[in-house]
Length: 369
Image 1 (cartoon, one colour):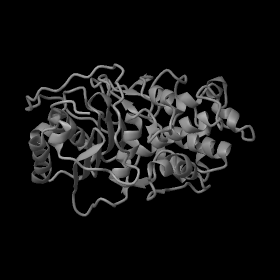
Image 2: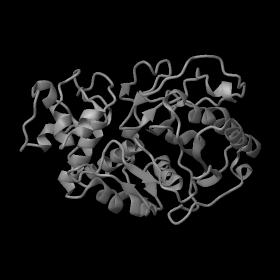
Image 3: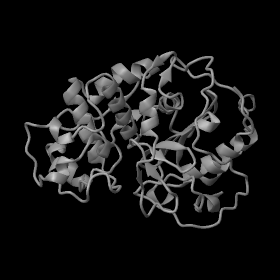
Image 4: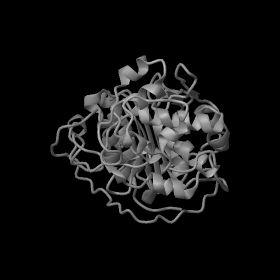
């Protein structure tokens, strides 16, 4: 498995800007299902995991339990720095494993998965009328401020540009963190390119979105999420850091359990519906998982794209990403959500994703609803 995990030639992988992996030939000959970007018929749900997830044997949900057990054994045998893995099929947890010292109720730092939560909150805020829409010009939300390097390009940045990492703003994380006013610092930066024309990873983008949400709703992103997202899903044990001015960090800073991460993926899998309630508008889910900007090298040839702070594949898969190997994968065609938390160094960032490619997807043997 160790050699296999160090090869990444299959375009299914989602790898962030901070990491890349050498190309090579995989030793796994398992046939991988082909996914098409087609509409997926929503199954009828018999229960919702608001209070608790139900568990099921993999075979009862059309999955190969032997292959899933082999995955867990190989993780331990190879000493991979996986902290937890949760596999949800047809709404049931079919595999769940925590590696010491992590346990089911452990709050795990999810890093940039926070960005995908911010994206969800922006969608809710638009539907509720706090924000007009993704075409809003971001500087219009700060009329009381003046910014350095002002000009036509900066004044053309929209919320959609922030959501898709295509604002064109230059950015340095250390400089932002050292600044007493993160929003001011981000929007003071020079323009790197015309907004909407290229991808440039920038956690400052989503922090500005958090500030806009707070300014329009009079609630921090954390408070807004508690009322409009976490409470309906039964998520009540979470922490979220703030910047020095009391703005929920938009790019990172959230801690939650793996099971609650799975709830977020399950909400998106169900097009924003949760137990008869439309928590996020279906149109927002669809827009969020549409390809806007292709992610450039060093991520090629994996053909990754950015949606609204979700990472998209060519094959209909999408995921929330966090540094060191935090993932929420949503695979609509297989009615599958996979959560992985880890402590993976940059040069091994592909390893958790290869578990999905080499074990979890091939374990799906039939469709059961």
